[in-house]
Image 1 (cartoon, each protein chain N blue to C red):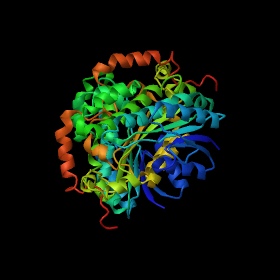
Image 2: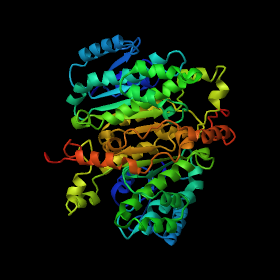
Image 3: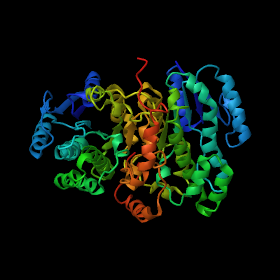
Image 4: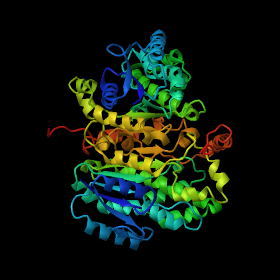
Amino acid sequence: MGVYVVTGSASGMGQAVTLRLRADGHTVVGVDLAGAEVDADLSTSEGRSAAIGLLLEKVDGPLDGAVMAAGMGPKRGRERMLVEVNVLGVTDLLEALRPKLAAAAKAKVVVFGSNSTTSTPFVPRMAIKRLVDGDAEGATRILKRRGSLSGPASYAASKIAVARWVRRICVTPEWAGEGIRMNVIAPGPVMTPLLAGQLKSSTASQVKSFPVPIREYGTPEQLAEWVMTMLSPAADFMVGTVVTVDGGTEALLRPDDWPARLPLRLLPRMGWSMYRAPKRGQVADYSDT
Amino acid sequence: MGVYVVTGSASGMGQAVTLRLRADGHTVVGVDLAGAEVDADLSTSEGRSAAIGLLLEKVDGPLDGAVMAAGMGPKRGRERMLVEVNVLGVTDLLEALRPKLAAAAKAKVVVFGSNSTTSTPFVPRMAIKRLVDGDAEGATRILKRRGSLSGPASYAASKIAVARWVRRICVTPEWAGEGIRMNVIAPGPVMTPLLAGQLKSSTASQVKSFPVPIREYGTPEQLAEWVMTMLSPAADFMVGTVVTVDGGTEALLRPDDWPARLPLRLLPRMGWSMYRAPKRGQVADYSDT
């Protein structure tokens, strides 16, 4: 049986994953605002430091996996808080937990992204760049300029940034090289208390007209099932993948955009990556077997 | 217990999936060149017609799922055969099976793509377009012009085309609207007899220097596990997704390219899709519950 850290463990999809892991006999150290093993506010630097301190104390051996499900939904006026939780609440914690993940055999990390990454208009490119670099203040300044669109733009920017951070870092000697399998799950609309509330609110008709080709919303249990597979040995060969589970919204809106053939402008970069790969230990190696 | 069609059932990943399904008590109607329930050559129009005739005969009720694993690897001089098997061997068969899939409750389709879609240089754009339109002859003419690169270019073009076909069609009233969940699995290098042979051949050093950040190859069993999840109720909310299982190659070579924010030029198209979605039945609908 393994030891897992789950953020956002007290509600929604984080809770569904926590329940599944515990039902299977694993130990879960949950992180949430209240009611978890580690109560902490991931929207401030102090809160994250406190969470990290407690996590390193409570996880005294190797860590078999981490599920980063804590996140804030779009809301105008809370841009700074949102990007801190959704980006730094993932990256700061994972960087601190990395040595413990490396100490386990084939540790798995699942980060919650969103399918809104590919369907939200007017997301400022520079805000994404700032967030990938960990500059929440700079990103917030840019995002606030979006005015009434700053809520969805901040949310999408935070989720693009966190997916990009994962995809850049997961393949490095410090992560994949240490046996850590890190991937992203990108849900569409899932029937959580949040969505149920929206369906009864004044914006219900807007929510109901959002395209979901399969004609039903996801459930926290379905998403938890994908996370469980991404934590299982089936994921030993999965690194840097974004698993979209969204009822077909992305395929409807962006069918031709991915997978995309390699553009010529990326050839030099790709040549360089391939040249360095053997030197960086990024090729298959069965020499000790 | 369900009824499934699996192409390429006699070897490699198709065989691994067939064994898993049968071990779980399902009925599998396999399709392969020889040694399957339906022996047929998917590289010709006549072969595909024969396969379809036999499949419609052998599957007399609803079809719970289809796994399209038959495929040919890159080889110069066999461009036409390759695109026929890898594209028309999927699309012709699925179009013929669609009514039987629609007759099942929540049928699942898994199409084998490849991570070579995003890492192969010099894939001609027009060849992809022709293949999505079903024009194997026109595509082959373009692909042959790539000379010594025509093998990998044909392979990648065929896999991009089939992924694009899936992503365009899966969200329509005829597929998602009929409850069919269609998705793509995109493996990287998997330890099959083909790869084992390459590792002993004169091109071994080239194969060994291909970047695989997790430092080991996939196994047919791991890929079969993902396919099983994509056939399970966990996939009730998954439509049009490409599940990449490749040890991190795509993330290493194209980290920033996907997920990508919505470009302004796609706004009109997206607006139109969103406008039409409720009329086309592409929104969540709980009216009969």
